[in-house]
Image (cartoon, rainbow, N blue to C red; front, side):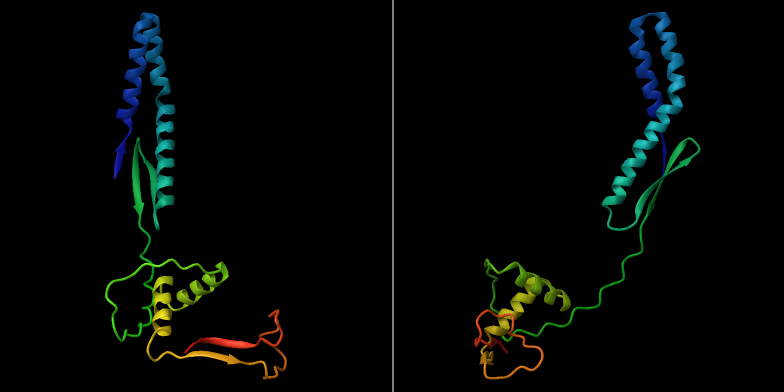
Length: 179
């Protein structure tokens, strides 16, 4: 695509001459000479402004960009579209729900930021949104066949690494969750 900036420079020249009309013959002649002298500078200023706009547009595009090139006295716009990103591998299939509950309900869940971060990591690893991952976790925990496990591990001696060593309450070595 080409853009001729000559009409814009000519418009600037006409405006300068019109402003000088009120100043008499000498000022009109000076404005005429000045308008031709300003031609290269006005063209450069327009090109810089258009190039800046193209750079800002390019920064907003997810890929590719817009280049402005000089083609004689015209500007040429080149839109470069980057190759489409490689498709993501398909997400693992979600287990079919035994029963669909119908309409969705919205809840507010307040959890520690560290727990949220770990949940987001698990959801990303599963190729799912956090919401989808949480729905599956809650669905599994509320299934008729779900088992709530609560095991006291305080009588088991740990050799080497003790996963409960960081807990403040000694003797309180429990493991709980849904299976």
